[in-house]
Amino acid sequence: MTDISKDRPVAPPSLAGDERETARRLATARAWLRANRIVGDFIGWEMTGNAAWSMLLELYIHTYSAARPLGVSDVCRASGAPMTTALRWIAALETADMVRRQPDPRDARRSHVLLLEKALWKIHQALDAAAESDRRLGLERLSLSH
Image (tube, rainbow, N blue to C red; front, side, top):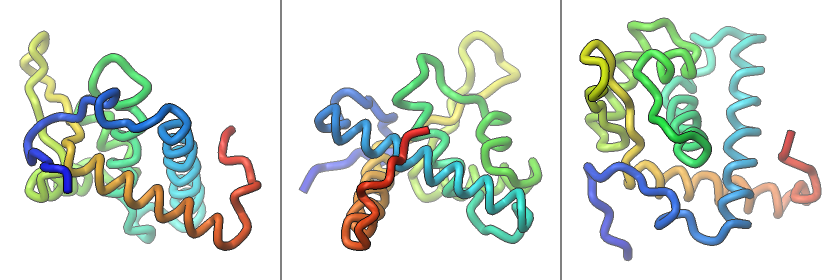
């Protein structure tokens, strides 16, 4: 079993696996995030209970596709929850050793939220399990990209 540091930020290239697997996981994460947003838009974000998962998916996608980390406000917006609720979810994710806040070295008023290795591996497991479920249901032929 891989030794996972609780407080080490993700370094995607060293943890990603092969490119095809990474692309599949990212497509699944994007599809899942889109589905969460659609459900939230129709029945209300407060009814979905997916704020923390939406944050983790947004951080996961951003980790592989952007050069700079996401700010706390960006992560809160990604959750779809009210700001105070989203901040509580970030605190809960920090307590669970899934994310870490880090002060912005260029702007003392801002902090970034970093996805930690433990979260990366858990997200990989969830995305892989979702892909396996889709395969068993015969849904793997559906395109997840959009």
